[in-house]
Length: 164
Image (cartoon, rainbow, N blue to C red; front, side, top):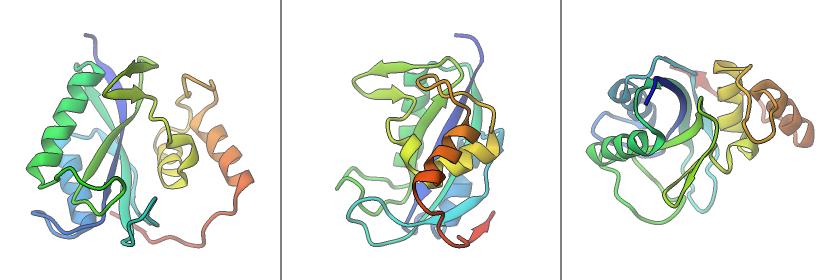
């Protein structure tokens, strides 16, 4: 496999071995060797969870094929104390492959690009800030264009807390 670039999403809304949710996200970025990262932002939960999330995305360079990177991400989740449970519930860390420089990948355990990234402002805004000209292999639109489309359909939340 040749060197590939990936956009990986990070989310946490529970304390873990590295501290609070923001600390968990930053520690996970270090654990996977993120080349560059977006700021960590607070976001509302998707689904039934009531706790706010700390979210970010990072650029990861790797010789791994998408399934191998996913396996490494799942190992980091387990090392951080993530246990499988209720979908969209509280979690110490959640790591997802969002985009891959190779385009599309689809198999039972992994779909790239991530199926929901175009509809989740907290992901799309961070990806657009980190890699604005990266093209979605499905729509062929840039991340900047996808974000404009999304924000045109729904209002932008007022001043989320941003920090690293």
